[in-house]
Length: 412
Image (cartoon, rainbow, N blue to C red; front, side, top):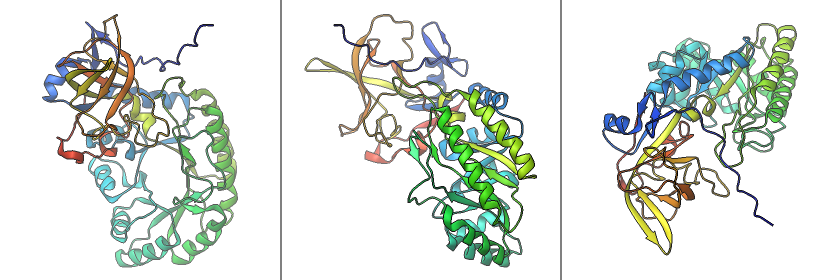
């Protein structure tokens, strides 16, 4: 009996190849590396981000607004690009708020979430006029005092910790005990306190999970989120004008994963938008996405500095590693480590392969970027490319670890 073939990565067709080199932003990889001036670096393809927003606009009903969750990639140039393409930006700190405002995002379309907002951050958010997603009873009192001090009523929505979770989600952000939001059963009391404090209530934010590749699970979570928001609206001190149904749209990272089908999600959202027009008139439905906008548009590029053979195993030692790309090393939430898609970006036309592992320069066995993958034979000077790297890369990695140089990011 023959062995079953190992599952393959989903086809990566977003980047073209010419003369054996990967093209990023229309530039051959070696030329782009020369333009950047160093390796390692992240490169984000501007045209791919624009295309992804267009694909979503075409698949989802016009009544649904698109927000960019900038925690996925807070590079100012990326945020500036997306601020002009989407309807709003979601931030998770005062630092991200500054980037969003500097990028030209409309303050009225910025929302601020996070379970531990400091009083100073809340004051900045009220002064900026952004929508604050309340995540505790404490925040009501702080915002009431800030509103009185500044003479501006804080704009607030309630982030709800629902009594369900997004099935098959990479990270579950709701359901059961969570640090995020206010438990659904406690929300009516919170709404009463919001009304008594004189805050400007605008709606609800429900985010059940992230990185989901099953359309049916996303549709089910959206339906449950709508039903929960509809029930809670009966306790609200003012009509709902903003309803963030979360996101959770995933991208394929690992062998065997398939791309998310947007068709059923678009149909489901059209039904919910029709219901909202009748049952919650004046409410804007919002989908909050991060990695789905930027994840597939980015690559991490690192140069081979040594080739080692250890007891029959080939190791390609590169100048980047987990300090720049923690998630590719498997140390950013993976239970069992799996390989991201990897290529030798200047040898894309090669037909011969070998089994090799790509490792970084750090003095730890955790510094592993690709484990026993079939790759073209590479030599010092060649460029290793890690795909699906546009989200949770540079800003989600411990760049100060062991004192190696910081990574460069470019938008091309």
